[in-house]
Image (cartoon, rainbow, N blue to C red; front, side):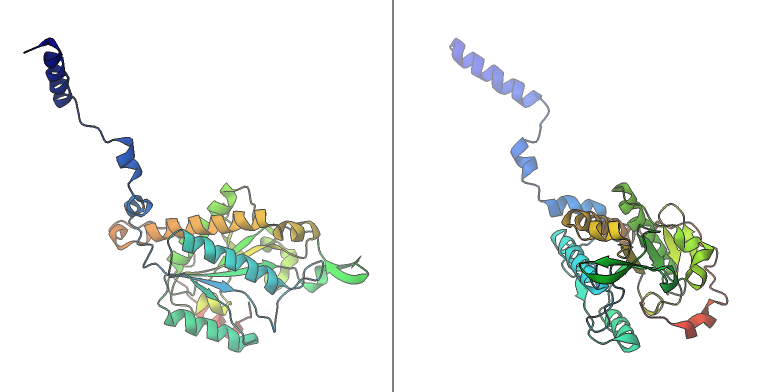
Length: 296
């Protein structure tokens, strides 16, 4: 045996004794979907309904510069839908309802319940009671505004059949918004809101209780309503109209859905993630408020 051949044999022997490693190209070949399986979330089967608040016929609040709330809702809801589909939630449904008033609200609920969805997220933008409104001139027209409050808010109903799931997603959404530097508005706890004053269920995430909303109460899946910000606040209206801010909210919603899907996976149900106890989970007496159904 010659010396070069002895060297070759030695190299081969050393390679056999060394621990096997995965080449970099092999790691790169692992698909994102395969890695995502570690979350135990079946993206392909999980269905989210992204509900566009209000309708063209009844567009909701009017912004400080005269833009209907419905336009803000539709734009943000479409972006959330797009983000969810790109994240793998291909069964996401964008719900746009044509009928105005109460008939439209019940149609949303009926359709949502018929879709066998796992989560209902209704997108809105906020205003204030009429008595808090001021007037100003914008482009030669009298417009209405209130700069007193700003920030988003999240609502759930304790009359929803899956109130724990609703609260869990509300908390996850609030935490994702907070992680991106966005703050919720605390003014719903203040006496100045009178009949619109709400109980704050989670002070960290900004989740409020609003039992009277039909789309939160009568849907048969976890349901959350997001007021993305105040469009009657002149500064916040401009911010809410920017693609950058809309992208922050859409990304927060997508990450919250991903975490919620993982937490609700059947594989995780042996030890489910539960939110902190809600004081009124027994819902005693809350059913009597069903007659107070309000429009979104």
